[in-house]
Length: 184
Image (cartoon, rainbow, N blue to C red; front, side, top):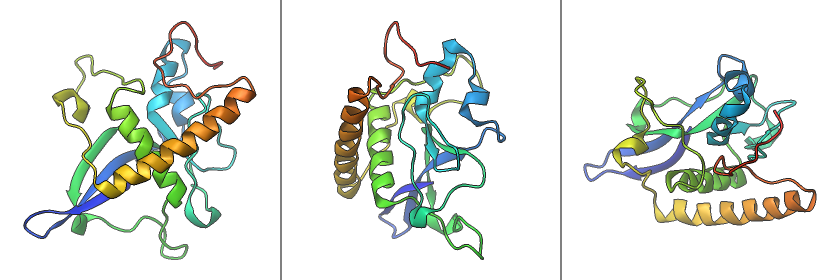
């Protein structure tokens, strides 16, 4: 999923992307179903799908035109990369047209990515496995002024949603809480 683009000095358009996954149609709850790994849920943002819920009260990213994913899918905050835009293809079927997040959902995604990169959301560490986070080497997801402004809008939206959850006795989990965990 593309969350930002920029022009390189040589004129090439570069897309900044985040990995999406469906966990083989199991969902994040199927992948991380034990109480001691609930924190991993926090680094995956669900994309709208019928019946989707978020046990950690993370935002559910809305698609344009009220569309939904065919399979429950998630944007993984810990796997970002850059690629030349010319190598990307449009996401969606020819019949249904291209799919994308609403502007509000993109704002929230950008805010969550920055919060994650700055240590405000739990990060699963490598433990010697073959996959490493770009954050392990100190790389941060750089972002344009536009992305920073969008992230500020996203933070405001999430603060409002957090206050609404708090009035009903709930919270947005980050995985950094001590001594408490959501019901799984």
